[in-house]
Image (tube, rainbow, N blue to C red; front, side, top):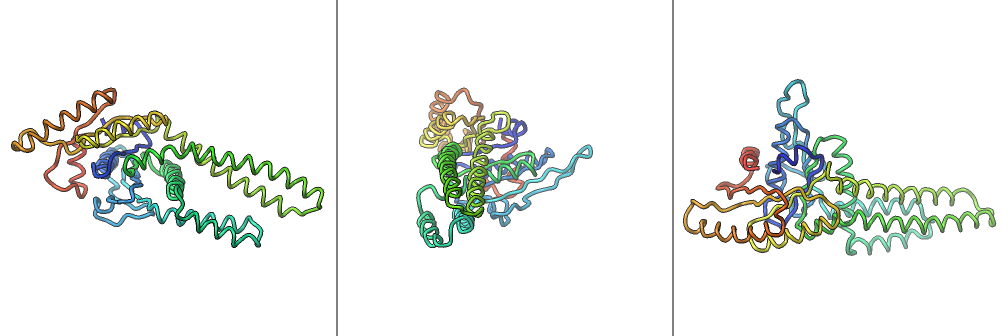
Length: 326
């Protein structure tokens, strides 16, 4: 299911409870698609980054080559896997620094200290990191789709992912509100300039502020359009066959469907074997009971089962073994 779904999409989100194997499955999918000739970007938004450990190389905030190019058939370009890890703290710091530079440029000099005070308070305010990561995701989608055939997101644990995917609409509405207030301010400012004979500097500043807000709103609108487009995008929920991951997955899929994010399927990872001793056989029977709960709630979604593997999933060879079960 997962590989077939990835072959028909441009953007793929893998999400679920922490520790269920999202990074391994995202990387295995990316590698399989690259061997099929596609250029794939894997983006990790999980603060507990494992992408670099899995591929056994340094991965950071800049795109790096993880695998390929592979031999191309019939003159086509060779497939590759590139990777990037979005660091929430670094992303938020860079975002606030950019906002600071913009505000210092656009506000009168006597307000500079007030701008700095507010931004220092905003650094640890609720939602600051999520808003910054959202902007980084929007950029990763746009840049990734320009340079790659497929962008695979290895997301943070379920609750964080659901909040993040709800943000484009919320942030877009908030920015629309700022623009409406800005329009009223511009009209009052224009009247004041006519009556007071003020120069063009204020008009240029007002126009630039409006441009910055409009660009931000449009970026969120484009992201919202992509993540709700079932022809381009799919979300795959990854889980273990255990009580809490199953219940969390059911709730996550409900939230995504309410947000209009297309859920393409499920991957049950690390499934216990039935023929490897009494302990694992008993565990598999318990897993089957939890999977009945999953099917009762989400039986309309296709599902893959990936067995528990004996070795650690590290390196390309291990990822190919994982992909063989998808």
